[in-house]
Length: 593
Image (cartoon, rainbow, N blue to C red; front, side):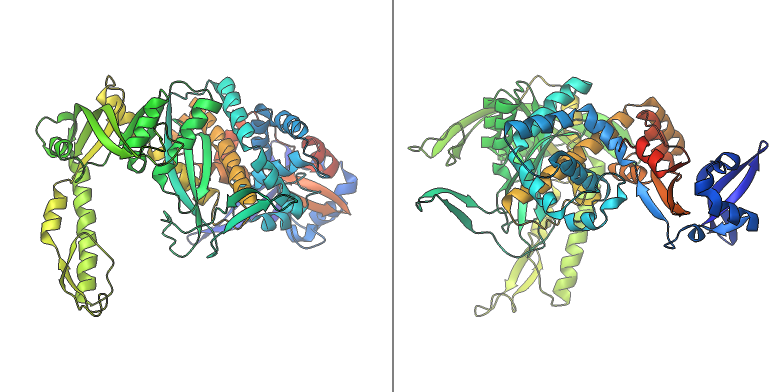
């Protein structure tokens, strides 16, 4: 990296440039514009050393300007997230609730929590310890940060989770008329870098009497990250149609996902006072008892359903291609269509959880009747994909059979020879052709159930297609925000860590919402053939930096060039930028520090 003097319109300008190679050609690009040289030279105390270098030649290395031989880069783009934070008046919220709950600490709780949110949003690859070691990167934010305070603030957050969620929801409704007519629910797992399962903790009073029992969260279960040997927790998440999170909960790692919906429904009804909402979910949630509980609370549902080998009459109607209405047809994807019919069905259901409406300690089984509209779709494109996926799985199995390799359980296999003394090593398999033929009947079919039987079928299909927004949320949390692996072991800190991730994601999705609703941004994305994502927003904000140089024992901050999306974000949020170069005092005044 070099400094270069460039003449333009009668003035000389000072710029940082760097060389790069494009094929065989060496080119230069501007990293930062420092400003007009005549104005810079008026700051004699800061510029004497720079002036000497200018007299000695046209180019010189940046390293020559630093007493320690390196440039110190600092991020001030985090102030954009601070604008969202301020729009929610979260300083007031935290001050009030800390006072109301009489939480007393000898450090700035508010600033520490905000620091954790910024770290998770913009530097999520860091652990709490890693963040602490590089805490100066977000300039002016963490100067008095202590590591043990970071961990303590997680426990404080855990104690105010409900109040925080309630506040954010109510505030967001007032801020941008948030649409909560439809909400998407799903469940995932988050793993630990640990194989240690938590035991039950017994809490006693001074007399030794048991006050309460608390089960640890870390447990083994069915991992959605395919982590067989690590413990995990289960995370449920509810988001709105724009992907902005509404609420979440954390469960023991062995918790079945079908049992997680009830807590969310209770929060919607009792805490959030949402009287009309449609819950959209995938097949993992669509057990009969869950659908009943949704209706009992006055809500509607649109859920994917299992129909293979489940309900013979419904299955036959779905896989019968007669009666499908055309949605679209083209030479690339073929036919795509739907059919709809209303079902009134009674099932005998076992209820042993006292949290369910029908729970009766004297009666385990109950008859539950539901009426809903089944909307089935068939797609040639999906049918081709289903066949290719099955063929690929069968090819892998056949290769393992031919090579006498260990084989995992598969529905496409049948045993042809098994040694009674050793049911694993000497077992012989072959591909079960009848199972392949049976499975192929379902290629291309998909079905959802809608409790509002008056709903337009195409509207229901369109709504349910947006279930991918929850999957995207989990993907963002796991990749862009690195929510897992989790390195905490105390329940309160585990929950606090996830609350921080929830807050970081909440603010980033608020930024994305603003950008998606900006004509300027949409025109830019269309013209540049770009797409918007949380990861790109994070990269953009991380490009809004300044470099600190030491000149004659004084610090000077020079604004670096940010990327194109960052420029658009700055424009949309009316974010005031610093001057091209400033003294430390002036730069800190700009930051309001």
